[in-house]
Length: 147
Image 1 (cartoon, one colour):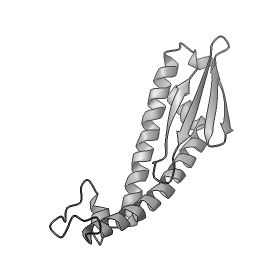
Image 2 (cartoon, helix red, strand yellow):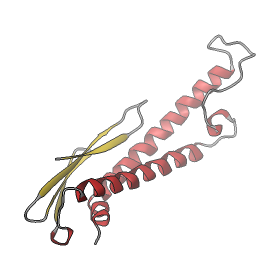
Image 3 (cartoon, helix red, strand yellow):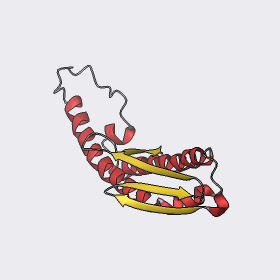
């Protein structure tokens, strides 16, 4: 089994939590941005009728026929991509520590929404843990740190 496969197996709970947090955030963000776009179009910010452009907003938000599912689906796809890339980066960083993957023992624990994974080959030990953050306006995000 490769180091990436081991890490994916050990972090399946993190992936589920991260995707759920992202989906909830995206639904709330979509509603907030739609409300803002409607107010903007109505001229509530003092820009007048001449200013009908929406700076950097997606089609699903500015179009009256845009769909919540499309917006949330895009954010979930981005979250999956982030998860996959972070596993690749983590596997690379751990491999740089010189662990013998054939003798690898792994233990993972959850601490709230964060996880801590300890990898050891009997001689060397590496601890990898996440810091996950997010809020009503801040998109859920996380990073791995290694000791």
